[in-house]
Image 1: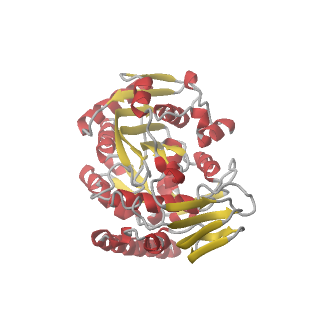
Image 2: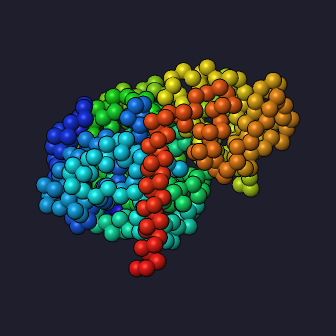
Image 3: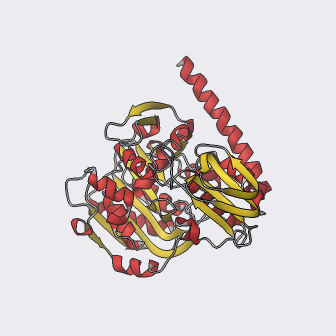
Length: 435
């Protein structure tokens, strides 16, 4: 962690222009006295992408393209630059790397692009963790001498804000991705700082996302932020989105664990755009999928607690339901509002669920209603938490919604990249056996 006063630089950048980003990043690195060296890992946010209807979920390639130019200007050979990501759970990252334009960017700029699931890895125990005891860490992360997190600023359905700290979930291979991704998600995010503590953060806040962060609507914020401390980067970003940093749960936990301050007065905030100007732009923005009860739909939601701990389970099956409906809403605007009436239940609910003549869907293995349950049909979707495939095939039809799986073009690409990833991982296992 940095002992000096953390710096956050906010620079106006109103469009995705690689030349403009290169100039801004170069000047900011000089201001921060930051000199990248050795093997450089760039971790963008490529959680989802679809060239037809998902455009603001990922760090724009123009931002990373400008960053790579700066690295090369600083003498870093392209062979020592790696773009790494694991992307959304249950979907092959190669698909999103292709759809977002990152595969083409890496080829064009002569740098490596790595799906962490297809990389050699080793198990690493976390010594400061509260939820995650450890995870399989890709060698491209372990071998990095310089870590640069190229984040996408968005509102988040579970954690209020996604920027530098939340980005670390994308370090996890899919086999570890959903562990403790329940009522312990905010603790898990902070756990990840032990491995994922970047040297510098470059934030794409030119167009930010709201709604469901993996299929969001865009808001023009028109800036790039560069910081030498992830907590400072996130505290400033949170304030820009209308939050007090201490009200963002994972930021407060990180500060309490001693990772740094989240007090804006403790930072050196500079640049050509005032932070209050950004807050004025986002004032009044409601990211409705943060509270699913605010989503306009005849579907009723019963959101309960997790077994054992009896804590509200915001990050498990409920998050998956939000994601499914949010994606449907983005692909077919208005369809969720026009859904067939019924109910979706997640977690353990100590109440009555009365929906005569309608369908009630229980999502997840532990979900149950301890009160009276009345419906024309009760359907259970199994999983802990529920997986992407179970949801997109099992949920929409219950409410007359168009399934994302009905997109033929996306389905073909999904199959192709799934098979490609499967064979690459098999090859990796064979190589590890004989090495």
